[in-house]
View 1 (cartoon, rainbow, N blue to C red):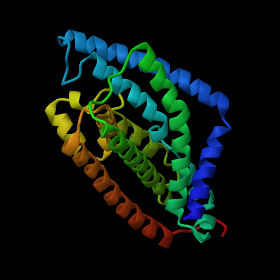
View 2: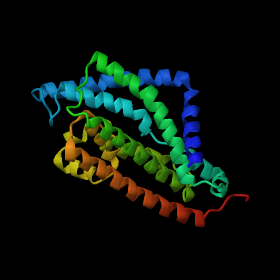
View 3: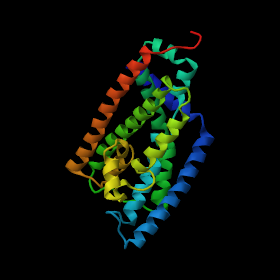
Length: 264
């Protein structure tokens, strides 16, 4: 367990070296936050002051919490594991006395924690000061929201890890990474809340794990769902995580049996 804590700490330190990238990221996410708020405010005004349970203050909360979680969730994709599979370094990883998936998971937690403390909190504070956000109506939203965020970050990692595993069977997975973002972005609630979708599209979205990445953590953190409803949301996220981890372990076992390293 100590090894995984050290890998998490290494992931945290690795991203702390890119200070200019942090500043640029905070600026970019703040600008896009203002754009998203403006669009949602216009839609709510046209709808008569409320849209699917969102008034302007709740919409602002949704947007700025989303901007805060965007970098920790890394929805835009990741290909480091695929690169190591492609160049054969994965053989070294599999020979090490640590679990490959848990090692990458620990490092990703370190990365996510650093991104949350820097590129996450700064846009949230900027949005709260300039536009305003609504605080949840119960203190339980904070601990349950923290658990929901951890589960969302974990789900995001496991899904990205599975996309990278395709590299065991395909030489170039850039198309899969692009397709992943095309699907995950709208269904996770990145553009607009999933609750605003028409019923048929909402049903499809809720049948996937993607709302558990962003929409559900925001629902819990903002107090949109409280009490037993919040517990149900967290349980649903945990269920998806268990299911996807089992699927990942099965894929890893199949891939390791067929691994061929060029020149090795």
